[in-house]
Length: 323
Image (tube, helix red, strand yellow):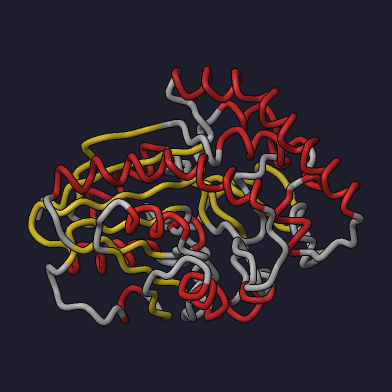
């Protein structure tokens, strides 16, 4: 989900406001090669929150998002096997959301930054009332045409919904892209009914994968990730915006093993190859897909172990609206 327009970004720490930091490393766009520019990832000297420094301007940042970022355009070649795989690994997210729906009670589910809308499609097929939002018109078009789910374009503050109209609101891999993630959390608080549930997922900057791969870890995703959260960082931010975490999950079948593979060999990542429109014969494409899947399967025991130790490469949180 490309970021929404924003005023000139502040380079002070999001969490504590401190301007002081120390550099962890330099990094570049390994995945999509949108720029040759090198960036700094720094750690706040006071609270240790990680952030990109200096933050790019909104105009710069938009250029780092390819047109078909994280979704396939209508007409793109997606095999039945690829579609089956995507549906299979997405059930992890669907089950987590359905548990949140049971806790919150029936009602409308909004997925912010929904991309092509596959998760919403799976929820709709199970009888839930769903709505998506994305800042990308291309993503919204895919959601409507391919997955037949309603989507609006714009920021969450522009949502065409009355206050307290949602049962569940989800943001999978959204907060790390935002200059001011608390603005989206405040908007979510306004839109959720009393006792409603917020579900967020972010890469985990306290994961074993980050310790193992450093600047090569795909969860850093320079230059698109402006902040990199640990669970403690996320908990503070949620509490500040009126939410209490009630459930935390450190494993995602869709994201953790695939992220391990992409960190090792970004050139094999299927989405990155599609986004970069790298020419491939059918046999080469199959070989690269098999290579990516093989690395993911190789990393599966490691990703399960790190998650069991609460150090998985993603954090998925269900939080209750409390104030």
